[in-house]
Image (cartoon, rainbow, N blue to C red; front, side, top):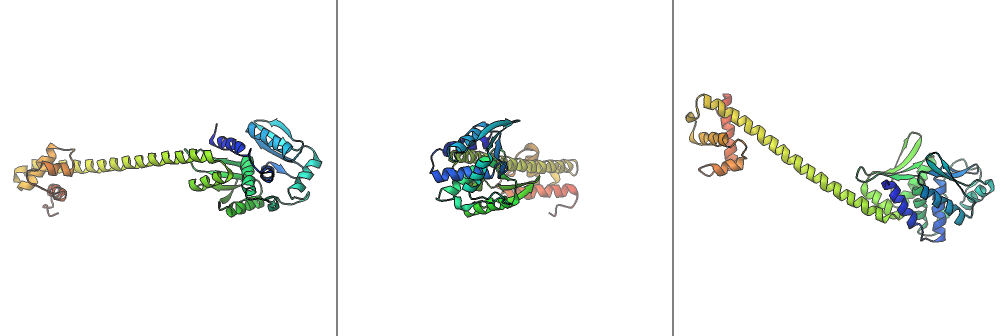
Length: 300
């Protein structure tokens, strides 16, 4: 079961205890953001059979409308087949028979919980949310630009401002920020799903931190290995000519220590030296060996 399906299953259970006005607002959200909401047709389609059965039951119980449930390929369609009942539902939810564009009739919201119930219905009907293990993304699919803008305005009024774009002829009202997605799910009643999202986010953050630490360490190891290889090459040139015995005592000791300990860090070389020397001091000696080998006289 996908994460989006799990969220919708939770919302179906969260919808069981609510005020009658909120039940109507939720049904209104489901119908308005369904496949069609007009005098010609009123239906919604979903791959989730439990959701389709729930919508069918809500039409019968809340709206007292004869609803029909039937398969459409891989989806289930819930519709209101009788024209007179479609007209009655339009009037009940504040819409006219000949409206040119769909809108959100705010007069349907009569208590503080109605807007959340409406948005829950819209989510059930036309939204999806990605599994947080993969990415943070929640979007409502809306067929009409004006309706998409009204949904954006309503979400913003609920302090949940979304983004809006068009893709493939469909308007997307969406979120990509994990905190905003948590806020939306909390507002519409998917509290258990928020815990799954938070846990996934924590796991992802821990994994990213570990990866960053490992990459940082590997980069340091790579730099250290590259530096040691250059130092060993320089020492080999100096050993061939003029010979390590021609070097000052401090440089000769640094060369011998590096030859004997090719993988040692600067700090480890300092600890092996006979006389105390700092990391910067040891690094300076090794740099002078490289400079001598390159023929610039060790001035660096």
